[in-house]
Amino acid sequence: MENQLKEKLVIREATKKDVPLILSLIKELAVYEKLLHEVVATEDQLTEMLFGQKKYAEVLIANYDNENAGFALFFHNFSTFLGKPGIYLEDLYVKPQLRGKGIGKSLLLSLVKLAKERNCGRVEWAVLNWNEPSIKFYKSLGAKPMNQWTVYRLSEDEINSLNESKS
Image (cartoon, rainbow, N blue to C red; front, side, top):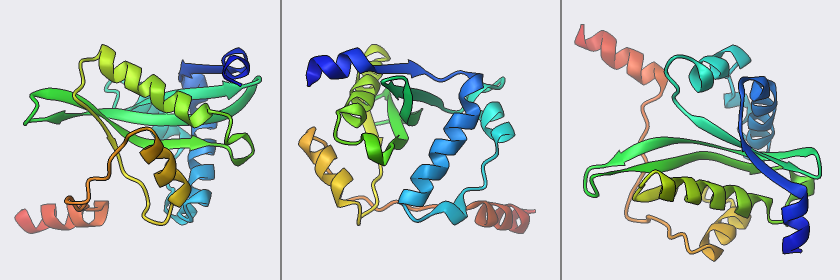
């Protein structure tokens, strides 16, 4: 199976031409996560944020047997304790009909290889608590949950509200 995967799988860096595909895959992921109602990103926004003057994130695209199979969207963060950059994996998605072929693992290993090349100290991501298949997959690779940490978020509304109250 490993040889067949190598013959059929291509993982490459996304280009501007991939923006419609990236948005489509983001929406597919959101449907899977039951969060489609939260997707407000547009092709224009993604083009600016991924390929504009300041690039905020990067994307790897997986093609399997000449079919768009999935993606990994990531960006750099920084660990003050390690004194090194890290990679934060925002989204990893493989189309349901192509799961179980090693595509997700190959995407993640490509990201791990990039982390090594870029002298990163960590690769991190979040996973929904109910997503048992993904949790099992990540643990099988040696990933460990950071149970002692709780993610906090200020959404755009809170950001605006806090900025207005400081004025």
